[in-house]
Image (cartoon, rainbow, N blue to C red; front, side):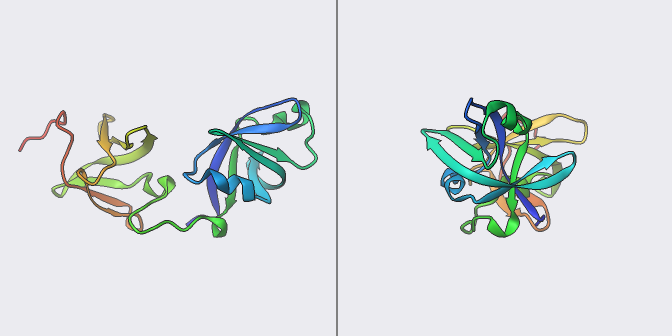
Length: 170
């Protein structure tokens, strides 16, 4: 696991310097407990003290210490927010962080299908975007019916079946 853990991205700022956050976490309450975060500025992660945090419905807002206006906080817009990996939430067995799934090799019946490039979060279930060797994209529902085994340490995913529209020669 890397030293830092991505939890969100800053989407905008209001007049009081509160930053709206796009959460990459399934645990939005984690933002309320943050004392500090890391933001990449000029290629280096800088520690930033969190002064306040609010959740309003599905919206998350952070206020960084010493950034009290939109002009001062504007520097953070479009920046990613990280925490130290030691602060990551423990997942239950069979659950995975999206960043651990990215770049996994995907196989069906020992045949290489492609590399998982993105996990799309949809209302019904997540969907894995897998890119094959010729650049085609395949969408795999992230449900037990399709997933046989996931080994994030080896970066390998084995499928039980392929989507019906997939051109399978069997």
